[in-house]
Amino acid sequence: MSNLETEPDELVNHDGPAAGILVLEPREVPLGGPRAMTVRRTLPQRGRSLIGAWCFVDHYGPDDVAETGGMTVPPHPHTGLQTVSWLFEGEVEHRDSSGARARVRPREVNLMTAGRGIQHSEVSTPDTVRLHGAQLWIALPDRDRHTAPFFEHAEPAPITVGAATLRVFVGTLAGSAASPVRTFTALVGAQLDLPAGTSVDLPVDPRFEHGLLVDAGTALLDGVEIPSAHLGYAAPGRSSVRIAAGDSPVRALLLGGEPLGEPIVMWWNFIARDHDEIVALREQWQGEVIDGGDAAGRFGTVAGWEHALPAPVMPDVRLRPRD
Ligand code: MN
Picture: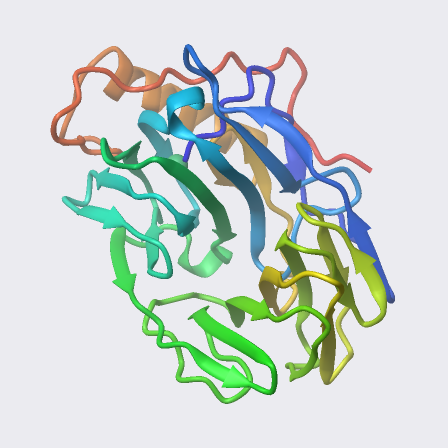
């Protein structure tokens, strides 16, 4: 979906070495529109920009669509990243300028590689009663960030590891089949379901750092309590993580990867490497799409839409890394 903050911060990867487990709190961000649906954002935030190449974690619902109006995100651009849509409940229609048109359904992964530039729309379907899921972004490494855009879909088969059920939608975990969707750095993403009062030890790649986004229940991540809607962070250097459920079942997303190791500049829906590049991308979006309707430009066109989302005004100061 689109980042609709009216004054989006520029965020640069400034993560230093970390040890142990951290608990990252969510903040509420309205998605915009007349009956603004609200998401809980845990990444990026002050103090942590990335987990592996995962750079954006929005968690939403369960929302009664009759109250929130559901999801209606008109065409908006992305560059330098991949988006991963993962639903627990409801259904969303995705359209993009690579020509893809897809239904995003629970337990099925939809991965859009923006590369050098794409635009897409996301609208919850008319028969959706409750909407509940996560929108995740992956930063592309410098060597691949100008790749041509494409869209992929997969339905990971559930596997059982001890008490846990895993659906591995990116990479591989605990002996699962490797997800067929393409990533450009070493990454893992999986839904984990754990009955009340049980725990599981998952073997993980020691090079990876991990995040545990808890959707339901309260999880213990290597003994540290991660409440619902929070993101637990585990630093690299461990060969397994222990996840335990308290008195109620836990549903969570485990996101991990090798630290990206590159500074990135993230503003609105763009990821680039410096201020000037962001300015140029914004001008190109405004000129080609908002003012021009140029289907042959960087961002192409999305079928069925008259209007796209204009970019916010850039801040007066030059975008630069924060300390
Ligand atoms: Mn989007």
